[in-house]
Amino acid sequence: MRIRARLLLAAFVVAAASLLLAAVLSAWSVQRQLLVQIESELVAQTRLVAELVAVQPPNPSLTALDSQADALGDQLGARVTFVAPDGRVVADSAEDGESLQSLENHAARPEIEIARREGIGVSRRFSTTTRQDLLYVAVPGGHPSVGFVRLALPLTAVDEQVASVLGATAVGLFTALGGAFVLAWIASAAMSRRVRAIAAVAERYSAGDLSPPLHDYGRDEIGAVARALDGSVQELGRRLRELSSARALSDAIMSSMEEGVLVVDSKGHIRVANDAVRGMLGIDGSPVDRHYLELLRHPEISRQVGHVLEQGTADPFEVALNTDPPRVFLVSIARLDLDTDTRGGAVVVIHDVTTHRRSEQVREDFVANVSHELRTPLTAIRGAVEALADVDADDPSNGARFRAMIDRNTARMERLVSDLLRLVRLDAGQETLDIASCSLASLFRGVQIELSPLLGSSNQTLDTAVSGPDTALVDPVKLHDVVKNLVENALHYSPKDSTIELRAARSDGRLVLTVSDRGPGIPEADLPRVFERLYRVEQSRARNPGGTGLGLAIVKHLVGLQQGTVDAANRHGGGAVFTVSLPQKPPGTDRRPS
Image (cartoon, rainbow, N blue to C red):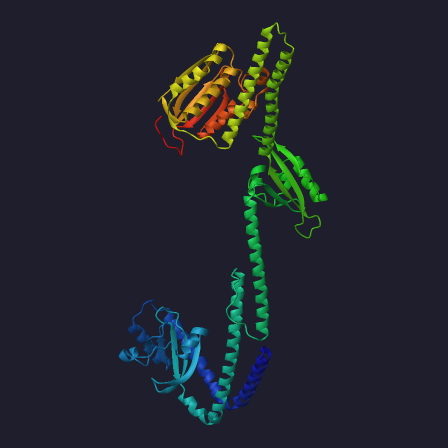
């Protein structure tokens, strides 16, 4: 049945029952007036007794309660019963002693149930205890030991007065009332259950639990509306899950990007910013909802963002920030439609190209330096060859001088090519370590002997010293090359009659080697680049030292192969100092005797 039909039927039944009741009210007027009066008085008396009980001590004895019930029963002329909250009878004016203990639990008595629900319960029925027709009134006791106070009054006299009048109509009246009550109860209970079920689902949805309900809503209009609303909620939940998944994926992508990303809305406020852009621009705190002019301190970036917001287009451009160290960024700005606003927004992508630009500069310098280093000996060789063609056969000394020049420059080119090939092998990882116990004093003597011609040509001396243990666990061959290249570099840039200091010491479990000279030192701007291949400061290039310009680059690779570090600095009082730090036992290697 549709809800409309049920409501019409319920209204018809109520109307019919009302007419029936109106027809019999005249016959029952005597009984009803009497019953109403008795019930009203009994209700007042019950409430009065409940108030008296409520002021009793918290834990009275059962004997005291029963005595009080007996006294009140005698005064009121009614049966007084005290019922505990769990339904036990704790006092009764009609029962004492063992008979009181044997009384049934009154929790299921109609008047008790009604009083528990509505605050006052009235019931009329036959008492099996007193064998009389009684009117019962029950109210909450308001006492820890007395949950309900019930008064009962015999109605025998009233029944005898109206029995003749109500005999025929009583059955029909109670039947009509019972039927109307049952119909109303069933209809209201069913409707109430459905409404409560729909409300419970709605509350669960509002709490964020969008799982579909397990029960059916029914086939009527309420069920159709509930199903439509439930379908809308499920579709909304599905879209929310998709949006949440897409947002999580977007956040994961943004957080893993090396490029900095800013999303600016049409009003210039930042909507999205990843961690990379915060580090690049030095943004403290959350940039979201802040204006881009507050965060983008570079005027060109701010100008281009404003241009895109106004015009919608912009070409990628590079900006340099005067940070420490300086950094170069490639900035791309594109229009982004965020909402219905016709001006749209902009997405700013910032890529740190500092390393790339530095690599390009190193490559350009390397090509220029290789060209310079090769062109110089080749020019000398070509000039010597041309001179040999014109040499006078009667003057053999000129031929010997030009051949010596060719030999010297050819050897220089061979050293350059040899060093380049070694750097290629080091880059490719083709050189392996051969760790052994090495005497540092012996290694220093070997380097001194090998460089003795160069030392003697400029009247320079090499002062060596080893502090602490003489032996170290290193690759002797590669450490020899490291020390040789550093000492040779110092010899090239030190004045004549000067001393090169070569020292070895231990610090924090590491071997520390230092090579110090008395040369002009290294400009601060060139210190970070001295280990680049073929890189030379302008003043050293002008002096045209005899090295290939690759020695320090080879030193850096050989030290790094042994998991060490090498640094260059200016020496206090003039000159440069190179420091090599090596672990005594590099990880991943096994010690073996030398």
